[in-house]
Length: 222
Ligand code: C5P
Image 1 (cartoon, rainbow, N blue to C red):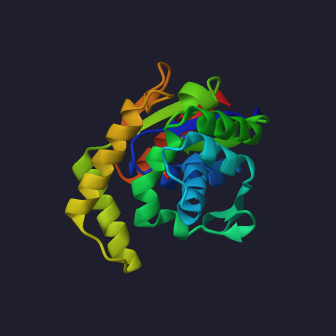
Image 2: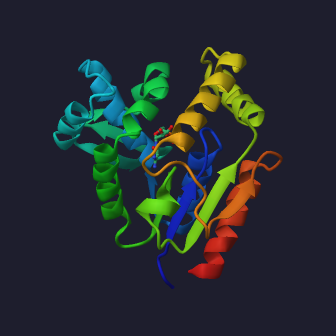
Image 3: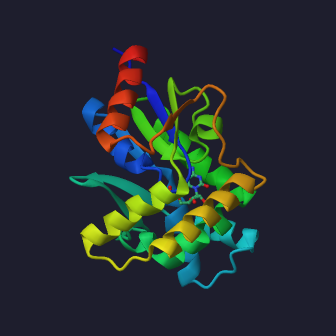
């Protein structure tokens, strides 16, 4: 039995991390949330008041930054220079700025280099925007998850509600649509379905159903 690599890509809030965690746990694979890495750098850059279009400065910060993904009971903790930033990197300011940081070539090259180290021995489920196209081009299983903007905003809204967070569905719709546009239209490794990825429209599927279909793809290929 072989430990394979699983790439899960798709637009914002399509449920990638939720299903990736379930699938990783099932096969005892490592889960790598690549979005968290871009978010952690963005969080640090905002704190240091770096201009987000200053690629040189951002790259300098990244080279001096340690981003660690630590498995925990409820998924994954994100450590930035040994400090737990799991919650902070989800705030609105980071969410609204991360695509600006992630568009720079040197930033992406360094992030991809780090991500490929996580994936080098297989047994990994990685989610992001460019995993199937650039980070793990030889992944045995590639999935591209999509859902309508409305459905994705609705899910985020529910999630906020159940956590007791304030939430405005119209703002969520706007934030999701804006981020999709920036991520799909950037020059360097834009959000795009890999040629050999299987597209799953999750709009009318449950998390469980999506996870099940990915698990059977893994069963076939491992
Ligand atoms: O997955 P998540 O929504 O946390 O990703 C946050 C942002 O990080 C994305 O909107 C995108 O700009 C960037 N990202 C990326 N490439 C990845 C993962 C995330 O550009 N592989």
